[in-house]
Length: 179
Image (cartoon, rainbow, N blue to C red; front, side, top):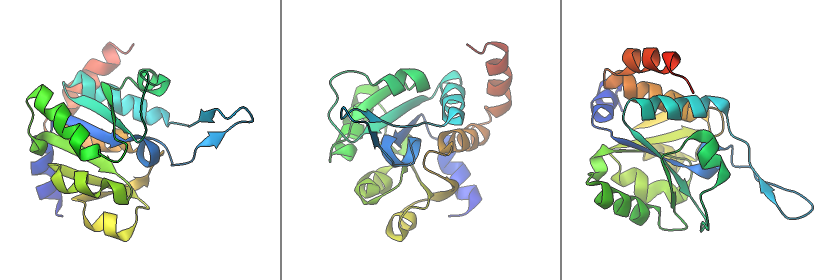
């Protein structure tokens, strides 16, 4: 899709939904001897989340498994909310949008693999990380140059905020009041 069309779609965005495994992470899950899982996240994504939230947008993680409590990474990255996706990501995002009185056209979704196709087809701005399978890349409005776990939220966030004319004021405000 042409850069101008992406910019027009980005102007309408009010929430950024990101797949956790494969977008916020590089998809790898480390399991220790006790069976505990660990993931790594890019510090630039925390910056991207903070910038978006400061500008008045929500940043929501889509977790592919059932959640008992808010994950620690959600607090660390300052995500607005984490939704359970577990095979029904589109339904979870639709429920979220109904609760917030948002249209799917106001959602930017960042995905990376085949289970993301329904959400990519429904989102106002469909973004796919570098390295995604060809069928997934074809479904996107924009394929980033950055792969999952490499700070893609920071990149996507900047593009959305620039399209909305909020970049300069948000960056200036953020650095003056950085927590």
